[in-house]
Image (cartoon, rainbow, N blue to C red; front, side, top):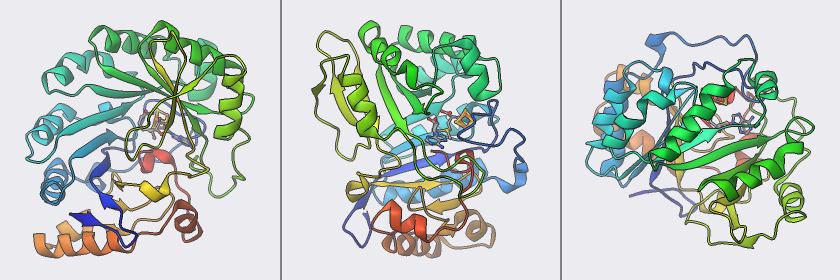
Length: 323
Ligand code: SAM
Ligand code: SF4
């Protein structure tokens, strides 16, 4: 079992398979982003090797993210191999939905049902303003196709003052019309512009109070290790959650680590890479050596995201971490 010095068990890996993206969300990356070369990415063989080692030590959940994961060539090949890895019980994916629709039947046949779809507005023009791309219709088509295929859909909404804060109630209303989880995420300082962020104007309490003023929300149980605080409106099919991603109220029960597209191990979203798995593998590290490095890095984990952030000089783009 993988444990840190604060007695938190790690059983969940977020795997960013590419830094490339077909959108340019303003909160995530600069419009003219420099992307990595292919050889800089962890190869599928390297990813699978790492995941086998981690799964043998108790990691059972993997989330595929990016960049936009469906831009990575032959993603289905990786998903097939991952789903056949002993110990891996659940694979989920976070996607912007632009290319996702055509993959749905293949995902279903691999038993992948949990899809987080990022969608920050329900208005086409605003979508273009936020993402610099005119892909709203494609994302909405993916949303409806996911529901038609009975996938478990959560919509991730990054709350941006004056940009989409007028739409919070429209998003809440989606849970009346569809069996979806809508999760409002506090904006975090990972827009690729460095440390120029003084905290979001809309924290989770402000978001909740705004929705509460219009809807009677009942608290529901949160899953163990959940980062979201979840509610249900009586009569609605879906759920509403808030993710205190900047306030960081959930660090005490954090069960996750992150692998960046270049093989960096992040033991905290806000921290710098603790080790680089790709460099160790390419230098010929044995499994025992690699495992020792991973275990030591996990042991050294900061108690919370504020401590990790204060040790990190360089806040990168979220597409280089995976969210
Ligand atoms: N491209 C995919 C997508 O957009 O769903 C996966 C990668 S994206 C980096 C993962 C998640 O991080 C998305 O839900 C996105 O909204 C969120 N995200 C990116 N930048 C963020 C920021 N600065 N603050 C809060 N969430 C952010
Ligand atoms: Fe791309 Fe996702 Fe970042 Fe938007 S949030 S630019 S879709 S990686």
